[in-house]
Amino acid sequence: MSVTKFIENIFRKFLPSPFTIAVILTLVTVLLALVFTENPGDTPHLFSILKHWESGVWNSGLLVFAYQMMLILVLGHVLVLSRPMERLILSITKYVTNTSNAAVLVVLPTMLVSFFNWGLGLIFGAILARKVGEYAQNKGIDINYPLIGACGYCGLMVWHGGISGSAPIKVSEVGHLKSLMEGTAEASVTEALPELISTAETVFSLSNLLIFLAVVVVISIVAFFLGRQNTDHTVKLERYRFKIKTNEKGVGAERLDYSKILATLFGIVILGTFLLQYLPALGALNITPNMLNFFMLGLAIILHGSFKGFLAAVEEAIGDVSGILIQFPLYFGIMGIMSNSGMINQISDFFVSISTEATLPIFTFFSAGLVNIFVPSGGGQWAVQGPLVLQSALQLGVPLNKSIMALAYGDQLTNMLQPFWALPLLGITKLKAKEILPYTLIFMVVGGLIYIVGLLIF
Image (tube, rainbow, N blue to C red):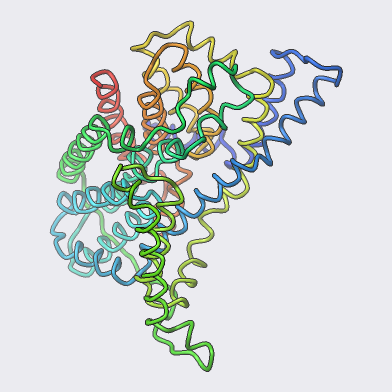
């Protein structure tokens, strides 16, 4: 049995749906809190833990965070469904002549787009891979379509180190760090936290940009050589087309829904307000979730050319967020138990006892990759693992920005193993997980080596 088939069988036999995993993790956390933590009050220990859980589920700050992440995914998907993005994708496909250059033409722009927005990159890569397959089919070019599909998924290997990365973009908000650690650490530890960690220190730091560049270049080279060494496949695909008709005019007041002038004007108002409100932060390279979403909202409305087209694209994209909508509160509940029961302090002390300033980022990297298999959401993972990473870093004197990026690298890397976020791509490309897995595993190993070396050097 091949390694990829073995891994696929493991996922199928032992990993249920992500929601079920979130429920199991909740119950396990409750049990661990009962066994390893003490109850300081008169209320029965189980009742106290359940209260911690409930308060975490409805933590208002974290619910805002969940909505921000949903908008990042939806608006990214909406952007890629616009006509200008479709023309861009088609302009790329005309350069396809064989599997090798097709792989580079897919993997390179997909990773670059994903650095800007992971939702945009995910759907962009999927549609680009599909259109490359269609072009090859129409021109009679035999290509390795599963490899092309895997290349379209590689954006999920760089997203968390990019502008829409959950951890770096959230810590750039004033007060987020202290609110995340509230009730978790001692007052002296919380007071030592900065008000924010700018994306200039994380996403736009020289170390992260060099690591990202290395990943993009090396993975593109690997994809090129994989295209030369693998057998080509015959592709049979129908034309993928956006389902929404945008050439209608409407009747009466409906004409406003189809008005290009009104949509463009409103989009310009949004972008003008964006510059007025966020230009200083933009100049300082400090990107926040609200800033990113506000910009994408205005741009998406302009690119779709009408409110009708924009809303139709939103309806098409909204299904992507079902996992975030229903799973995030469960992860917030887990965080509530861990922070209020003292579990985070215990786990942090353990990591500190086995780590040094040099090795803690490496432990963080590997633990984040492992956690991502069970918590396939960067935002949910940050809510659960973020306090642990911050406290361990403070105790050992590791720069917070380095620890945050170590978590981001580990989380994004094992997306090449965890097929949860590949579902939209598989639906668009009509491929199966087992077909792209052999190639994503190779990309994961190569990317992992680059991230480890980067963490050791920087």
